[in-house]
Length: 259
Image (tube, rainbow, N blue to C red):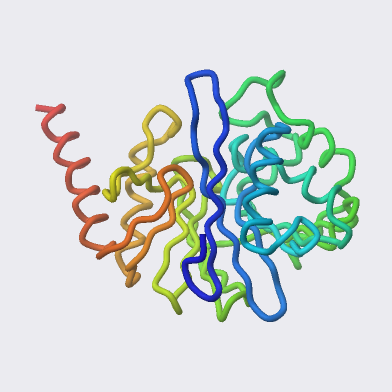
């Protein structure tokens, strides 16, 4: 699904224990880079759905040279190793520095028992080498040119600039990405969309709800006219006013519960 000349959304439908679900990874394309944001589950069904979606837009795994992970959850990181091993070129992988101990296996993923973790975790743990804190890079993972650790406010030189927004609460290193040229927020799981309405993070999968809603306040300084939600797809409209209402409704609910 082409959104702008630089942004594409790839709906991938998968079967879960509670029924079918659709995930919405984002593809960013400029003259030099083909960037996939989030990778789906570590299942054959998810790989094939993502590959089919890429092909429908004229792309393939071989075209991807950069992968950005919005956070550590299995439906976001699971397909990483498959994409890297399937493609023929080296890949840059970006994620927030707060996610590093979970993604490299030093800490268990916050959501999901160890026996359900994707093979990605062991794979990365074996391949990551020395971490130089000064340049925030991890070197020499199979077919990975570099793993870059992101920080709040980083401006990535992709598609005329993409800003990293650290959004802790859903996970410690959860991020959103803002593309100012198109006024688009790539929200990951910080926001959800249903029937062209925006909602806050899912409380079932958000361990620190107060922190997650505090993080939403950081979005109010951006001119958001479009939101791509990993769960729910695309919201078109005045994002700031919708996010303000989401925050206010949450704070009102908390206040009523405390009375």
